[in-house]
Length: 146
Image 1 (cartoon, rainbow, N blue to C red):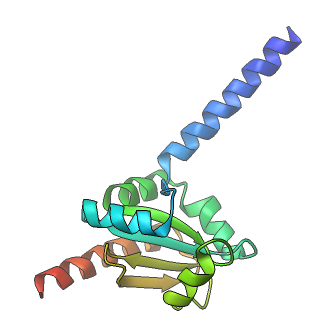
Image 2 (cartoon, rainbow, N blue to C red):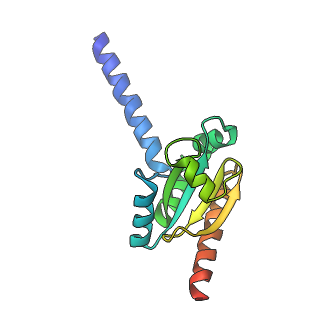
Image 3 (spheres, rainbow, N blue to C red):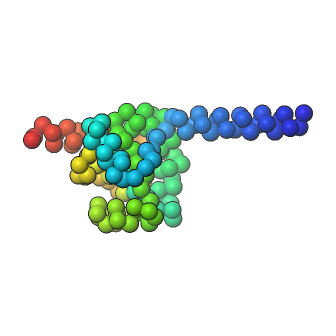
C-alpha cells in the first residue's frame, strides 16, 4: 500500500510538472546555427534569452514569466525561442558578436542573424508580451521598406 501511494504521488507530481511546462514558452534545443536555419526556413524571428546562472532577474523571468500560458501561447506561435547562457558553450562568442553587456538581454533576431529588436532586464508578463509585439511590428516594417 505504501509503495502504491508513493508511486501515485510520483505520477501526480510528474504530470503536474509536465502540464505546467506545456503552457509556457518552449525553448528550442540545438546549436545557434541550427536555430538560425530553422528561423530562415519557417520565416520566423528568434527570441533569445541571454542569461547567466548567477543573474537574479534572469531566474525570476524563468520562474515567473516564461512559464505563463499567455506568454507561451504568443511566443510559441510567433517566434522560435532559444536560451543562451552567456558564460557557457556558444554563449561567450554569441555574447561578443551581439554585444551583450547586461542580463537578461532579450534579443529578437531574424533568420539572417540580424537583431530586429532588443531589451534589457526583467519584464513582467504584459510588458514582455508588448516587447514581442513590438519586435514583430519592427520586423514587418523592415520587410515592407525593402
